[in-house]
Image (cartoon, rainbow, N blue to C red; front, side, top):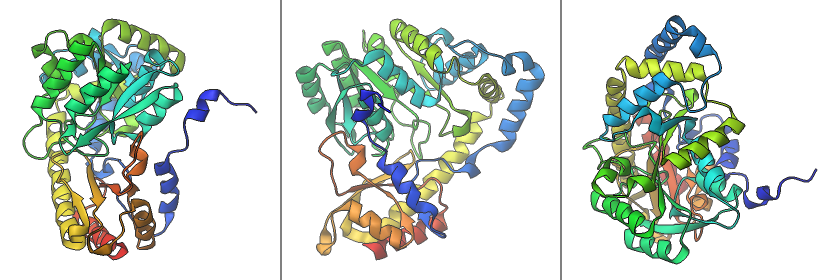
Length: 395
């Protein structure tokens, strides 16, 4: 068989390949980016699904509008308002997870050879998705506070990209939090260079202490002209349930209309039953309590992981303590003559019964081979301490 040329632009995810090694009994995994199933509000979701079937069974089980189930669009509009962003239901579409929103951006915006700027590092599936549509993916440098805005503006001026993709709040894999000042600078450069900014925000509700700065979407009202150059992708996967596959995209009208057209060809609409369930859940007002619980548990695990890394690996590893999200991003310093190759370290770690993800695949270019990602989401404090002790032995 002769497959489409576009498949030449992508390769199998290194992370998916790593997961094949995780069947070993007793292994402690810090590799996945999944929420902990113990955090799912099972009773609340049961109640919401029952209400969906009892109150509007026809609508919940029938085909629906490509744009999304209207009661859910209304609830998501209210949810965004609670986070400082004024969005009418007509300004958003419901997607099958935020991953579909990224795919729709690829379909509607990227022609072969177009340039797209992403953070280095960034979400691996985004790099693969954009390359699938023929994009030349350019990496913008980052530090502990997110993308470096001076360098980003230089890259925008040089390459004139179709769009810039950012995860400003507790990014995957970096965990970095873009400062308020840099957020304003991003919006200002969008207007100055007339460049679309894509804000992906699946982790913004998972903060452990103070709330993060407002999203780019919430801030856009204070930077004239920036709202028309901003697309925002949201998701319930990390805070409610990945299995519901509920995401959404807020974007300028022309982009949204083209995304709806492409979605019609893809899946016709996101599951109406899942949408009706999510709508009932949000309507019931359970989300604030769910978020408070999730923040507390993940916050405790993040503190435990940070303390264990310092205790067991010492100066051989450098990292910033995350203030939210699901991830630690660290790099091997080589202190004491120890390795700086995270790929080799990952293999040694598997032998000790613990797994993490080397950082190289998260870079569109010039990967830092010393970096690696650890997720604290699915392991309790005891497992975290045991797993990091095993990492110490591996190193």
